[in-house]
Image (tube, rainbow, N blue to C red):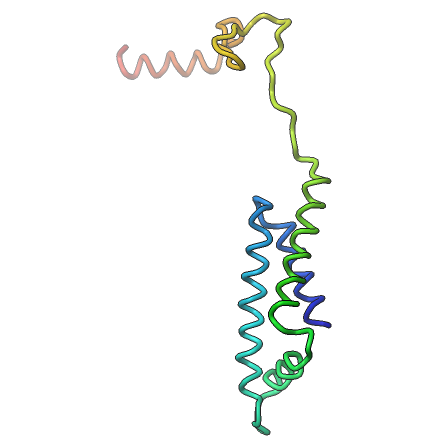
Length: 142
């Protein structure tokens, strides 16, 4: 059971961190499969070995439980990733509305549907910029 909870939490963490959200579930499944495989390899060191290290015995105790097979672990991590990525998508405040130029100003004229050209009146001349352009022209001899 502990392994399922840990993998569900790892999947939930990946669901929050991984962008785009559609990649969270495959990343969680691959991470869970790799870590469960490593636990199986570590557990095989402790089988019929009285002098096995503590971490091998602990991994054998974890892997011997019936709920610590590959399918339950993968399902727990994928469901954690999906749940958290859906919650992140629903509560994401970083979304911004698409920028639409102000049509009442009349500064931009439409070229194609949804496209605007910037009118010269929209660009303000800054003294620092004009001074820099003057110095560049004098250095280049233009």
